[in-house]
Image 1: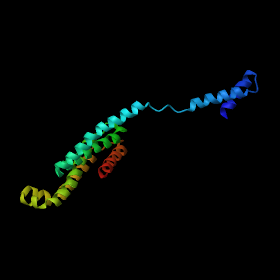
Image 2: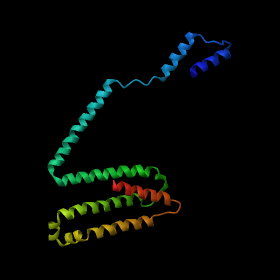
Image 3: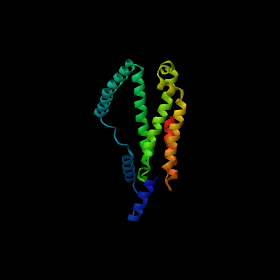
Image 4: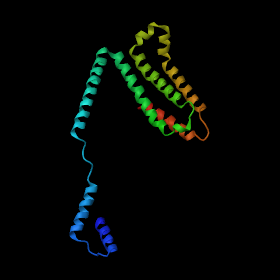
Amino acid sequence: KQWYQRRVRAMQADGDASPSLRNRRKDKDEDEEQIQPAAPPPPSNKWKNAWVRFLYSVPMIGGFIIILWLGPLYVSALIVLLQVKSFHELMVIGHSKYSSLDLPWYRVLNWYFLGVANYFFFGESLTSSFRALFMDEDYLNKLANYHRFISYWLYLGGFIAFVLSLQKKKYMVQFTLFGWTHIVLLC
């Protein structure tokens, strides 16, 4: 309807009050041509993308099967590697908005809290699974017995470092990023 009203106004300005049916159909066809979506990519690109995905998926699946075959230690290493890379990506997303503020110790504290969280969670599972092994060695026995106490003090040290890094006029941003770090660690 708008194209018709524009055409009528243009005709009235030229002195012709009634546009012909042929002109109206021509204008309508021009408007429809403008609305048409872009053509899909040629099929060769589609098959090329499928081939590239196939070529990368075969080694990835093969590598995963090899890691499973190597045993639990390598599976644990893969889990830690994936966790660290995921944490890095999420921290980049969280920090991208505030990168110009030059926040002190921000990245160091993020990685510190990741290390403390990994120490706590992996230490809990290791001490419960390998209790007999830890009883043989004196220093491992102390680590196993005081694991939660050590984890608490490590976390508390990170929290104190965060409080010492606070700057005036940046409190809201720093607490937001501190919360973001803990939400990422919980996921």
